[in-house]
Image (cartoon, rainbow over all chains, first blue to last red; front, side, top):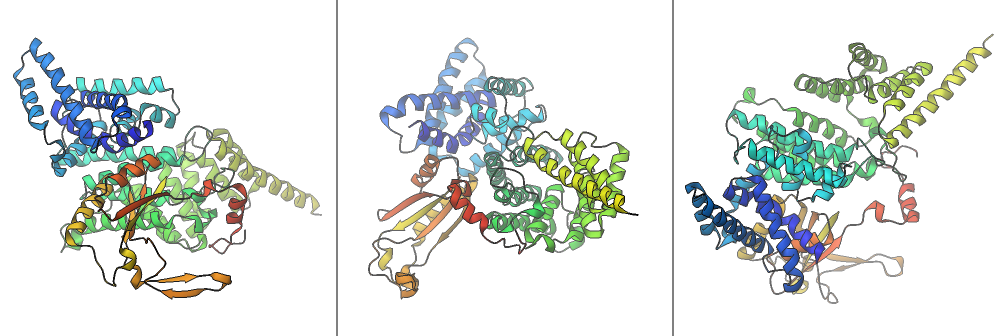
Length: 437
Length: 137
């Protein structure tokens, strides 16, 4: 029964909290009311059985509780405003399931924007989004981010207080604010995805459950904001990246790099979904206004990243990869997202399209700039390019530096095997020099 | 984890070619599909033409044999499916319960096998399979 209630909660909680938040104008309180309803379900359903419409039951229970609280409150302080809420609650109490679907959509979108509000720190936005929209328990979120449950609980309590103290309105931002705030929402979802895709801590390199949570959030958002190309771009990016989850680790859990992956194990269903989402984004980008191609909107960073992922997905073999297109896509991306990490990826594409020496030139510029000093992939890529140029001794130094910087034990193992390879190559190179007369 | 919700409509095993659900049932089902989509759990779905338009291939004695539909021996047949991604079997069951099914309909909820579910010897057999990339292993 507990598992059934947990399942009902996962399906219903976001809608429940979103509707309550509109009524009581406070996300923190809405969440507590929803929690109270959950507790009531845990107490009553084992005896009475799951009601026919569990969502409506939870909503009615939460609303009655809200009315009780407001009555007690308004006896002490008769605020007209509060009485106004009370009336609205009463009006809403019967026929709960009749809530218009559109209203719920808007409430959900308001909830998403609130949970990802810039007054909160990025980690807090992530926690709150998983909790309020993803329907995850505090324990599940804590486990996902490898922090003690008490720490995560505190973070969530503080977040709700911050929202309430900052009087963050429960609304969908409009005009130019919308795109700015949407950036924050997309960032939060992609952060969740990436924590699953490239775990920054812990023993496992990938944690697919987090990727699934992020994908679910992304798919929900795509339905709530269907006219935003970047939303579809993000969904496309995540679907295509997730399509490789099965191929990204070997039987022992060690990482397998993209070009070494068995493409037969890529998930065609997710690739298909990703390409469809990308097409949707492209249509939105190109179709405003429809008749004038020159007004077509340049793709945003998620659409570009999805294009990059799609480029790999379309290649039937690693050898068939269109590196020139990838180099061009990265060049476009680095303009939108001037970041040394993107530049590093461009270096790899350039190396594969035009030779390792060309790629090394870009990497060396990054080294000179002193960017990414603590990022293990910089020496890892540099080592790889040096190795391909047969500069094994230098490559070895780079791999060793990368090993020292890598935080994930699985990734470290992979680098160690590269280092061992370079070491044996260095030895044979030295040997052959010695053998020269 | 993924689940397939398999729709088994009683009577579909004898349905004549071209049989289609009525508009009202379709409308209710579309609403349900939309709910799955909006919840971010729907991966794919399809409805199938009746077996009278299909064929069966059996392998008795190791030899493929084709029988055109309808299939006299079939007691229940698949009418369609949904592929969903959820956290537990209970959640999949909860979604199945929300389907506007008719008196004659049954939904079977089945988990999709993942590579990690296979015992080690089966995993090895899959690993050994030639890489579609054509590279030697």
